[in-house]
Image (tube, rainbow, N blue to C red; front, side, top):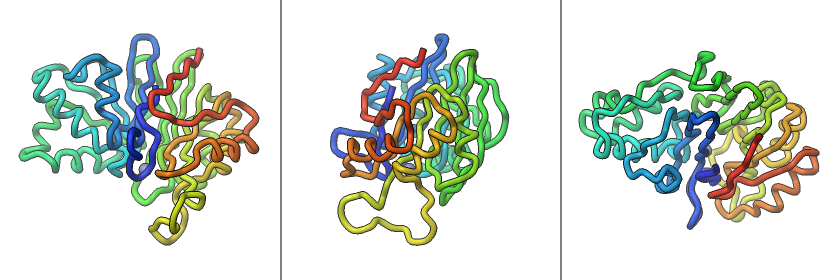
Length: 253
Ligand SMILES: [Zn+2]
């Protein structure tokens, strides 16, 4: 299920990056950007966040991890002493989250057990978790989760990179950054320098080169015309092109 599909900051009524993948009774959360936690807790039906088996965060920008702090609070105040939740994330995610609490490093360690990315492969429930470093302003881990008969891949935030087709190779669903800042309303948003985000055309091309079965465009700059960007991606990718609207559920098998 899509928890949020906005990049940078959330539009009214939407949320930043966040996804839940369920398979074989195992529930993994991919990113927890601004505004994703209330949607996650509603999905779980638990104010304490019961039912999360693992959390993966692609990088330390707040539009991908701000609500990890909220999930920490849900566990710390709502289910103290419960088994720790594996947290797969690049260096810096935990420290940034901990900085919001006094004695945060110690407290965070009682809720999450950190495993560094990119590294592994790891075994996360039924999944083999592989990761690859992709170009962004901070270390960003592209994610590939495979179980027998099911593969889901997610770029996080990335510039164009030769690793993108391999990351999403033959995936049942490829979640690809489609920020498309050049198409965003208003003046071109900063920062200057090399573009370390993808646009919809590049996302479609990456999914086509990967041979993915379905493409899920995500990380839309606020105010973007999502339908128009989907059409741009569809010119490059022949399979189904979906957009990461909040609440969207996709059945993969
Ligand atoms: Zn982002």
